[in-house]
Image (cartoon, rainbow, N blue to C red; front, side, top):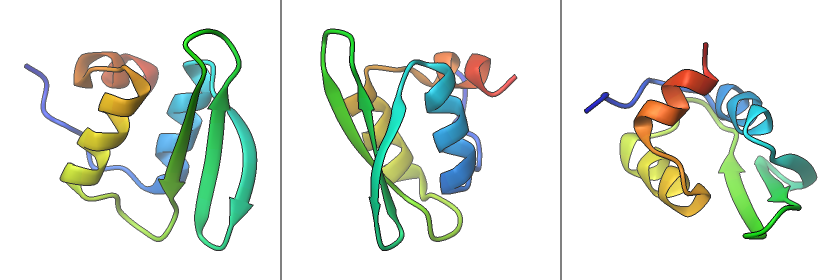
Length: 75
């Protein structure tokens, strides 16, 4: 099992955009991304520094991605 990387909100957004998510809107320091293909998903990504491991794990679970898939998206 691959360990979770240390990421900022912007780094995670770039990786999720490679996975097919698109920027939808922003309110304060939280960005909302959406996925137009089924299953339709909407993710809220905090952008105030480093994302904590538990928050990153929850975002990946909601996005339907594993830590290994995230590592591939970051390359």
